[in-house]
Image (cartoon, rainbow over all chains, first blue to last red):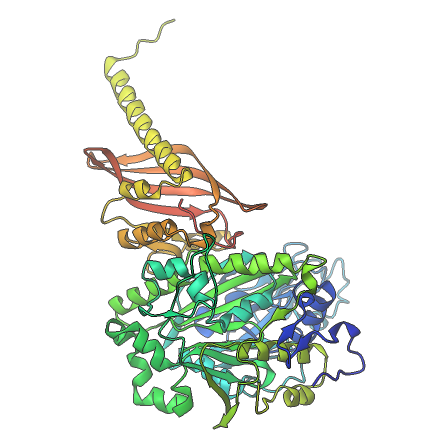
Length: 455
Length: 181
């Protein structure tokens, strides 16, 4: 499980210990590891760029990150979509500095080299007088990722020509994750992508997607004002006390007991409460909100196992799909800086009241002013900060919850663990992360990230 | 040479100055409440039908600048009615809203106050702000922007019937927006 290809650096040795459930903290601050992530993960994986509804008309573009590169996703004259690396092939300047909009051409503001919507170099000032008509324009188009594809309107690209087709990369688990948005209707992105910067390593943001152990404490204030429903029961405090020495009363969330985990090839995972637990918790008032999950079409599309999923899907490396029809992208900018983007979806056919209610839930839960996410960033930035201490970095991260009890059930092409609140999906993600970093071939990677019987 | 000001013009100017003074004093008192963490009193400055809105801003080419800000009904950072704003205030008072506990230290600077219109019952004013926040040991955030308010006259002075906050940032350079603007 820990063998590496010959060119894998020693720095990866012993970082992830699945048996002990321990993670070396250096992975959150080490520059060399970050460079390996850029090369072996963000240089190879299929990465989510945007949704087709964001660029409906020819010339519409949306700038999206691919690792440290930026690409312009552009609606073509023939209705197709291309992604173009946002760097002029003359002197490297960005050919577009807006984050979205509509253009007829991309014109570099340095010397005026002009590129068509398809990235072809179509204009060079001084072509005759300065270049003597000797420049072969066909040799200098804007570069494109090796592959680009859409799954149900979600546009992904990869820099690796050898990457398997998008649908194979996503697998059943990844496709199910996107179906949880796509199956709701004729979906489009609500105008406006929330974008904000956190001083944390990107892996903390991923880890937290699956973490249903933190809401009771991190989001205590949101629970107190009714933003998260709780039962009147408390879970055992396990000896935890508040700063005044009183026993810590930890409210039980009705979703605590019933969790569904799906772990999958390449590191995709879904983990969180079952749909049944989510609906029971939300109560009668939210019956209409979940009606779409119970249409015959949806139930067929998801299958019996998929119907049980109510928690948080994550498409490796950085795309999280929420219960309220949002996709959050976590963009590594440096080992200690991550940008978070929120794409919010709606059904084009939804009525005004339904639309308004959904938008309110989307705005008020997550994002920097969301009643929940306000608190999250502080945990991640403080956790990242402590990984820089000479001594603190030697304290391993402990992901030991339920360790050795995660019995994997293979069913209908999915790998499922049923359990109360747990840390299986986090462990799985770190395991897959390490396998990516060894730089192994796609076949090796697929094999080493195929779930076994126990976690 | 002497310039004789007509008494009428004088009176108009005095009325404007008085109103300007009242509005500015309202904003300074409001800022003082926020910086002293007196949110329970701050929330009483809003009408029951208030709309507290902070749209997203996007970097757009000049000719598409009319699309720079999202509109109500689109994505936003804040899109709050009185109930939601009250929930935010309650959340801060729980003592477990960790993004504000230990509390941030804030300084609300309000300038460039201009009264844009006044129909007697309500007036529309514009103000610029700098919200300076330090947090924990060395966290530092600064938000600069423009507010457009509808202030409704009542027996006590003014109530905020609408506040739209336009930040100067597109990508937000802070890990949360746990303060009020």
